Amino acid sequence: MRVGIDVGGTHTDAVLMDGTTVLASIKTATTPDVMGGIVAALEQLLASPGVDRSAIDGVMIGTTHFTNALVTGRSLAPTGVVRLGLPATSALPPMVDWPQRLANAIQASVHLCHGGNEFDGRPISPLRPDELKRVAAQLEKSGIGSVAISSVFSPVNAEMEEEAADILLAELPNLHISMSHQIGRVGLLERENATIVNACLRNLADDIVEAFAAALLAVGVSAPLYLSQNDGTLMDSEFTRMYPVRTFASGPTNSARGAAFLADQPDCAVVDIGGTTTDVGVLTGGYPRQATGEVDIGGVRVNFRMPDVLSVGLGGGSRVTRPPQLEVGPDSVGYQLTQEALVFGGQVLTATDLAVAAGLADIGDASLVRHLDRNLVNRGIAWMTQRITDLVDRMRVSATPLPVVLVGGGSILIPASLPGIPSVHRPEHHAVANAIGAAIGQIGGDVDRLFAITASRTREEVLEEARAEAIDRAISAGAAPGTVQITEIDEVAVAYLPGNAVRVRVKAVGELDLTGEATGKEDEWAWN
Image (tube, rainbow, N blue to C red; front, side, top):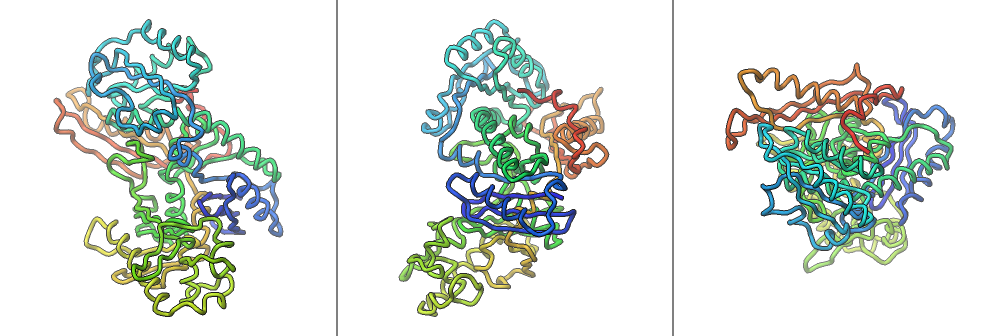
């Protein structure tokens, strides 16, 4: 059996699953400290009749902790930034495009050093060990314990980043090191940004993993802990300590995966309506379509794998602005919905009140919204319906209409049909689809880098190398070796670089290995 948990801005959801069967589910209010909501959800879930806590094989959690930390600029560790690229790249130093508030929050110690490679792996300049030893001395003097290392074209040749990490660790053995070739894609500034974000979250990751583990012990569960990644797969607690940045956008991804599972619709648009926001994404083969370029998180441009999702401030707790200009959201009462909404005896007109007044939902006390003007209610429902329809239309990449799966507790706001949509599905357990998506998660590994095709290195050999590397990364992350399959492969010729260069993206996915035997290769490409 597995437990899936998803922490949202309004609700914390939890499900207990035996294979593909949902045995129990619970939805509780997210608490200000978040952790209290997780413990409360687990206690209620595991209090269900016939639950044997010792039979739980794993607990999978989707969390917004790390995203919130970056957006708010809180709980970020002082970070060292080492770029290998001199004499090139000095015109645009690290963090040149960061918001000043975030740059101040991480108190960055920036160092430009010699090194880096051309696109075909040739060195720009040799690495200088003495230069890096001086950097280590300055980091120690500043009390910095986490460092981001980036090197020009390190996804092509990672040797300089690895050698630099060895030198710094020899000087400072307790240093947390994040290397850009393990985190981001081709594109120096965006990959470097992603690595810096990861480095400044390393200390918080230790605290969060330990707090989650303590929450499980508090309710008597000794099963392994896994966290959801932003591509729909899982990573274990130790992987989370090293790569907290991979949890960004895990909430929308979990909802999409859960929707595909519940509705048996591997190719569709998913509309996840929560208490605060609505997320719209597209599933291809049961996994969220990935964004093709850079994404902006808290004002920082990064280029690691992220789902292609449109998010708007529309949910069950959204405040309704009355005529003459009727709008719903983006302001929301959030987790205070059960105190603030009219149907719960509050004084705020919310989207949930409109749904109850229109007969779309049976929540709270319907008599408390009978006085609402019928024209106001109808216009409000029509406004929300059109808003959702427009978002789905924006996500299409072809003229073919997409079926829609509605999930999330706030999906009650929308009627059973949408204009121009061929079919709308609202499956059983739709309110906890995000927690189900976490529970059914698999383990993945991906490769996204440039390869040079030469007379001695054919296209077929390049693709096979990329496939093998993706499979190895999935196994290192905790996938059972015999179950890993390639689910995505993309090959793009890069015309603006000299030579026969090709960018290859490969994703491998496998079933979770609960025996603990699949992590033997982790140290080959992961650092402290």
